[in-house]
Amino acid sequence: MDNKSVTMEKIVNLCKSRGIIFPGSEIYGGMGNTWDYGPVGVEVKNNIKRAWWKRFVQESDNSFGVDAAILMNSRVWDASGHTASFTDPKMDCKECKSRHRADNLIEAHSKGKVNPDTMSKEEMEAYITEHKVKCPNCGKFNWTPIRQFNLMFETSRGVVENSKDTIYLRPETAQGEFVNFLNVQRTTRAKIPFGIAQIGKAFRNEITPGNFIFRTIEFEQMEHQWFCKEGTDVEYYNLFKKKAWDFLIDLGFNAEHLRYKDHDKLAHYAKCACDIQYLFPIGWSELNGIHNRTNYDLSRHQEYSGKNMQYVDPVTNEKYVPYDVEYSIGADRLMLAVLSEAYEEQTLDNGET
Image (cartoon, rainbow, N blue to C red; front, side, top):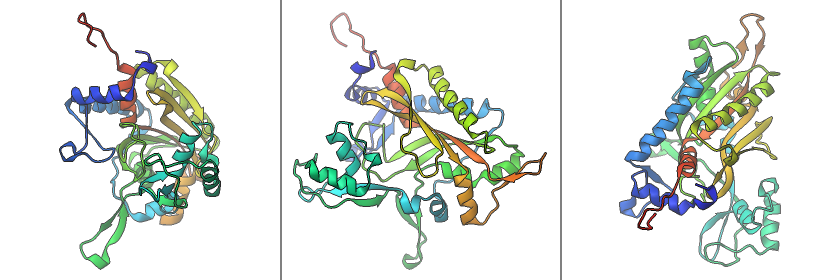
């Protein structure tokens, strides 16, 4: 079916009626942007995960799987930079008390013509003030200043109130692969280049736009870190761009519904980054990402943990901290793309669809 004819409403209704995906905690009125997979949905999603695992782990010459803990030592997030800088710019409407992301307000007001990712907090505030961007909830213009909110879910470990330690639900699965780099390399005797892959849950306390399972506060990631020597990283970055594309084509996606999109603004750890976008019912949006993370993550964990994260070449005895090329795709977002791609309406003899 033409993707332009597929609406999110049609997909949501189909999923609920066919036992694919249900609203979370529905008998209690639900919980914002949480979803439960039904009998059909869980089988489809598991098939997607198995196909990915087979391609990038079992059929790979030198890739290995891990299943790291969701709760990690809080120093992990200090090293990764999440504790200090994993934030969203948010504003509160003084009239209706609703909270909104400033960048989303700007993007919606400008209809995508202004890229808030390139703007500072002051520039975003100036835009919202100059254009009198109103609250989408109540229609009033009465905002608090922009404040940065950390996106990690915080909890406590311990049974005695005054001796509890703050820990976090992981906001990404990648750090589980990085902190196990030495363990995997030692036990498998893997030689560079090699990969570490994982499928697991992550959590982000962010304001989501409500586009079904496209972006949720609890989600499942499928990630593959490819560790290589500096100087070969660009070659492997381009290789994984192709591998990621080929995987989607082999799943049955129409190439006309996919496109590459290089990042104009890079994360602090990235040398280069690219998305493969899919033509969702909501328009072109990221489906998966390929990132050249350099040796940033392993170097940071070496600094914060005091452990030597260097690889020793068994032939030349050269020591170095490997570079990393990351390929990441959300299982839930891929599920939505599969549903969108496969959706088709048939008109029966009685005129019903």
